[in-house]
Length: 470
Image 1 (tube, one colour):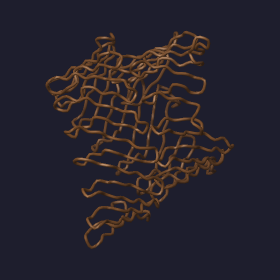
Image 2: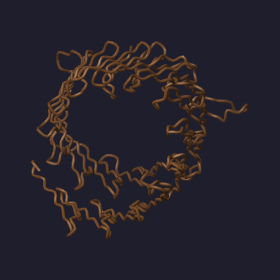
Image 3: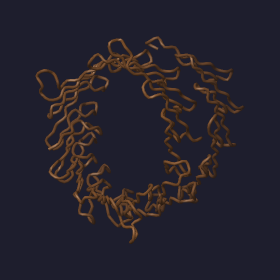
Image 4: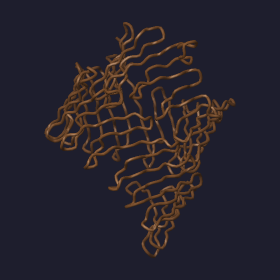
């Protein structure tokens, strides 16, 4: 390529790719059956992957160094069964080959009811709760009824874009949305909160105004952000090289004349685009090294040409991190289930942290899986001495010590109230004091109120840009 990296590809007499060598020399090899399907891959990390198929090219078996998965089919390539070490997941279809039921490893079912044209009109979850959907003649959902009976109503414009979400049975404020001629969202309102957007000719957001706070952005000709400024005092500057990689970043906040409110960093990358050096304020330098398939293997922090901290990472097949050796804490080792879930961490001081999972993925902090108990749908019912209760929609409503029975009672009781859109509205602490939350029409938290203190946020997309107390 233009940076001098060379990748090599080998082919057989039929023109099929049988080997790939990446720029660092790692090799992947492939084998094919007589009809041209890949049946074996010796991957870059040494993982030996074997694949089997049926007569119409459905994958029926996947096997590698750490896991084994089998698949079953029916009809026109419809997956009906998936089996691995945790158990079997079954899929059932109707005569039109539309999915009607999923049965998990614990024989719990998720079911769909369909109308004559195949639109979902109701779904019953693994926890047995039923959601219902009323649709218009165009198939659009105009009313959603939650298991609790709470209703959400949806309005649309002529282009089938959502313009309104209302909650007639809950009394929560409506959420409204407006769009520009290009179809992009230009305004979203919820109660007293309004967010407005403006875009450039490439469709990138250049201005975002939320409740009196404005964020301005500029981009280069390829659409990468160059500057970001907010009326609350943030000023971010991005410098990039010709390949689009970040070379420098400067952040300024407030109006400190001595620059105390400024922060900057410099970045250096190798020819493959991996960051190899990160220069921070105060002369601190972080350096990174990678293996031949791009996984981080070494991270060092230096100051005044001396290494102050170092970490080494050891990897197994299928991108499983096996250990981290820390120059201060020692080595931490990790182990996994055959399907790749992290199961155990052993720390340098001998402590062992468990993350066992049952057939459906519920997590337990002990190897015997006795300290927690779950309800259908993955809802945590008991965690040690703590018990949890939920509403009909599956939202957590109470968390307390004890069993909740008459003689035992509920100690250290936390209570939770939810908005009709599923966002957390209020928390009542054991001391009866309340914590309240508000959100904008995009689901971003705007405030957290506790007593006389209010925490507020200004957002840059889905990331907080400002946070302050009032």
